[in-house]
Length: 115
Length: 110
Image (cartoon, rainbow over all chains, first blue to last red; front, side):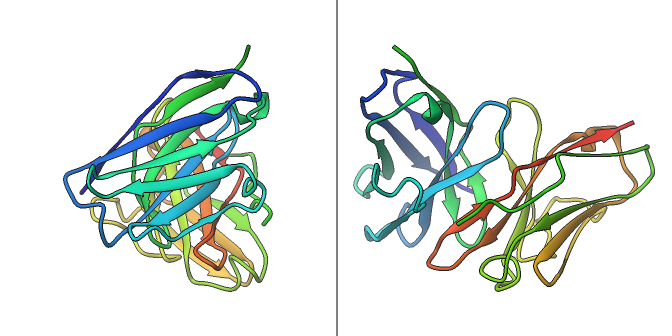
């Protein structure tokens, strides 16, 4: 089973861009779907979007205008960019391996939006 | 896409059975046999417990079972144990490679 590890800043200022990277080990990023999922403190999970290893993407309609997910197969990594963040974007962000369900999760990283 | 509806809490005594519901629409739960359930202990990542409505990944006890009727899916935990106390989240495929989650249910073992 693959292992996933999120990395990136834990604090982002309002109106700025949140950027996270997920490193995949124990397997190739190729031939799979990969996803970002977030969980605001004390709340449920929210699917942000997915990327196929070839670069095909789709996003949660509620976030689509602000989200970009990209992949770097040479580094076995995929990344998340979320623009114009507000306090409502404060959450634990998980990267995950995805098909019709999520079978592998990263440990999650807390990103706080605050000045 | 709207979140799936789960009860905020559920409880049972050790040894008992408890069932958690997850209600969606014909565009997600009712339209596909791709409902999954995740267990999440505090401060931890979710863990897949059930996928494709009623399939268990290797290593998940058979005390955990899933089912679906119409637009509502259910997770049943039989023979409750203290370690089953956790948050449980459902999700469903919602078309176009999209996933939708429920709001989560806190299971308390009394």
